[in-house]
Amino acid sequence: MASVTLELEPEVLAALRLDPEGFVRAMRVAAAIYWYQCGDISQHAAAQLAGMSRLEFMELLASRKLDVFVVDFDDLGRELARG
Image (cartoon, rainbow, N blue to C red):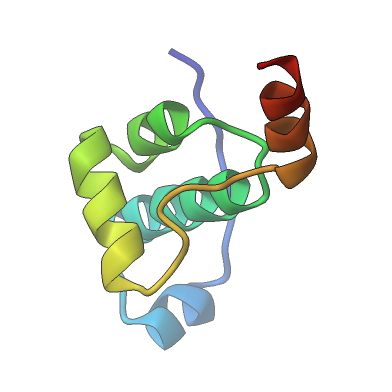
């Protein structure tokens, strides 16, 4: 497993009212949502990054009124054209 070190000013954690572990959890979820919504990673990969099951990730997206399924309409059109 890869590891990343991030140095933050204490004021950042204080402003968010998070301890370092809570910040890491929140950052993983935020990154997972962002990269999934951008289409950079699959829903499965996003759920793994967020540290939850795919169903939990889908429920999280729905609870935040975000797109649960990201569809690239150009890809969809090509798939439909192929039959």
